[in-house]
Image (cartoon, rainbow, N blue to C red; front, side):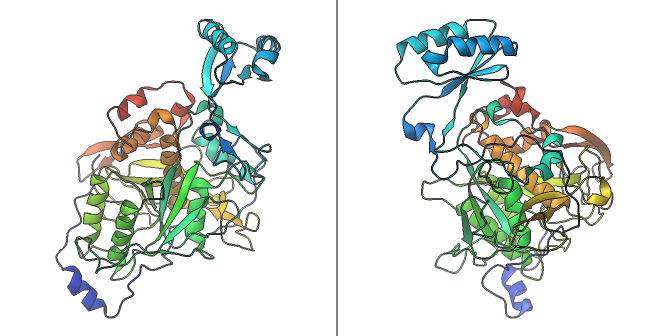
Length: 477
């Protein structure tokens, strides 16, 4: 990956703060967004949604102390019907098209004998299906049809195609995420204290947690695209099952903006939940074209690389080449920083948006309506009425802020699959870039060579095995 050089600095942190006059000791709560709400009309398509965090009352397989179920892939529906009838009593078999679900009981010798025969039968494909046991059936997400063009464009896998592992924590570095939204997972709100250039704060808790509140629309929409719950009969589904949304107040504007964002990055690195799980992905859907005046942000980004945090940054919507004109943090050269440009649903670049061959790493669909004849994405929001509302607690979202959220959700989804759980942040960045489609080639005058920027493509998750799994060999989670 080629990116612009490390952020230059010539003015010390304390002298900068002094020149700003009186400043707040906490990060600002309302950063200027990369996107604005836009009027749109709903589309009519509807498709499958990804399994999310289990609804209230759900018990996971591991907590129930029972083994995984199995799915048998047959050649046609007639073969599946025959197999379901054959195993109706022994396995409580259920047919679903050309597939048959086999329910497994602990220590059942007869079941294990039949499974061994199925594994050796070339007519069938047998695989584990780790399932949630629900006290009720999953309910459809009524607004999911709005985002069907996105899911189709990035080839979202069906839940049965994943090898479900553990969901991860995702940080949103922005204004506060709405904590009481009915469709979001648990939100942890952190209001970081500003730090010195070397990352130290002046005693006490550098990352105090505060009560969640009404939230900021931009941050809440990012969180919704990443991890809105699925199957709860409310709203829509995000890209990934998420353990927690860690909302960390940050800003990039003004004379302390770089210190605010740096402090938020340090808090994302240092966060641990009650079970010791850290943040794996930090979404930054904002940026600044101002020249940094300290090393605070570049050192925080370097620390994020050293401590294995994937940073997903939006490229911006200014129509600029950020390979020649720096935009922080998206012009960072750190290999764990994944810079995202916006595409349309066919993988084409959109005029008026930032670009940068040699700096931008990946594209994702989140087009404004003028770029396509389809609507904007829909996501969780603060309570809203008016033309940008999908329905009450949901609103439209687009451009590079939304595109970065899509990629953050994709990284969280891949990490939640057992086959890729061991990926490091740098390996995850390489994996997502390597899996892309609709590649666009462009010339970097600064590098004097061509570079490809491809669109996010998750079709590899739909296959039982993929060469991309080798990228995570030797990784650690």
